Image (cartoon, rainbow, N blue to C red):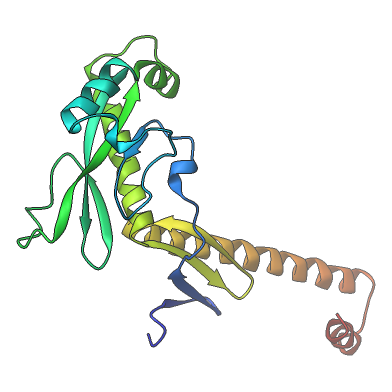
Length: 217
């Protein structure tokens, strides 16, 4: 595509998938995790009053989150900065970046016992619940990485559209949702037309008159 957008024909309509420049920051959602990040060029993570110079090194930050903020799951966050930025959980980017470019730890994402009990609607926390909670935190980081790297799209077609789809899976979902919207539109259009035809027949409106009425709206 000359404009970089993806296009797909569906029924008599064209679906266009384009970059969503106005997608919401997912850290404003009702997240399970809290994200504490520090970077000298980027404003990352959740809004807090914490300052990077409060502690000496990430080990002290880890201890603070565990003891003072009651973190029960605490995962390190790493950032890769090279023409764009990406974030991931748990390890650096050496496995995908031989040159290492500009990468390193930028913070933590954590959650508390109280947050897990509320989110998972359970009375106690076992290994299965902890594993599920960790998966949710990793998913939140993945979505946030898509957000900060601009990997967010929207769909539009002749009579509708919607944005806020993150990542490659988001694009597939955007196409699917666009088709559902078109299906509903076409179905309603056909039902409306059938009701009009039945009304013409019931009122014995001549065919020529029906066409004139249709042209007139």
